[in-house]
Amino acid sequence: MPNQEVFNWLRTRFFPHIWCPGCGHGIIMHSLLRALVNLEKKKTQTVIASGIGCSSRMVGYIDACTVHTTHGRSLAFATGIKLANPELTVIDVMGDGDCTAIGGNHFIHACRRNIDITAIVMNNNIYGMTGGQVSPTTPVGSSATTSPYGAIDPSFDICKLAEGAGASYVARATIANPKQAEQFIQAGINNKGFSVVEILTHCHTQFGRKNKRRTPIDNVNFFKNNSVPLNKAKEMSPEELEGKIVVGEFVKKNIPEYTAQYLAMVERVGGLKNGK
Image (cartoon, rainbow, N blue to C red):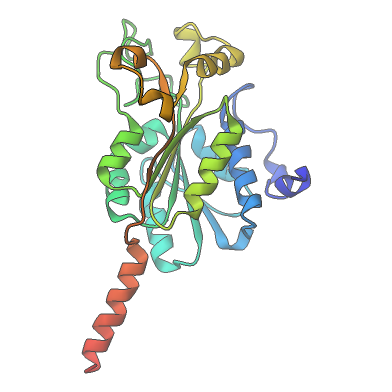
């Protein structure tokens, strides 16, 4: 793929970016842009929404129809945009705290509706921008500014949460395999329904330095050494999977999409009112 095609999707006037050197969010942005180029999407027909946080700054760097909204509420904005114009490609980029803490209610109901939005959840296990507090995905025992003696809250499994809430496409990758992330994002956009692509990344500044993963390469190696493909994971015991990251496509199902059902209802009700 010509790099120029990807470069054309960038708002270069906003560079250099605000992310820390070595942050994995840039890798995820590149995977997203490559997926959009592969699918031959048009900037004027592509909407990318975000909330608040390091991951949510991504919309400032992508030259498409973007909306930087409030913390945890980006899926509500994205839902309104999709309902207003179902022909648009709508993507929502979020962090783990943005998505599953303050935005948790919006997340589960977007899954339940199965509305045609692709949610890319960048999971770095921490609130990176606001000081390194514990998030809903911080592993038990991990240190953070609000858990100096180790987190004791059980952490969310975002993919299991999405599957249980009704999303029709659910997948997980890590920044150590950006090509796989690109493929899952592309599959999520192609899916006619609510798609969740969780991508494990790192915040070496806030999480890594407190948990023996101080440098970006420490984190990349951690993901490489601890990722297990879904097919292999099915053959492993719970003890063998302890501390491992299962990657792959967890849900791929064809179920009715929300905006299509809504438009069908409008047509049906209009016919009834006209005596048809």
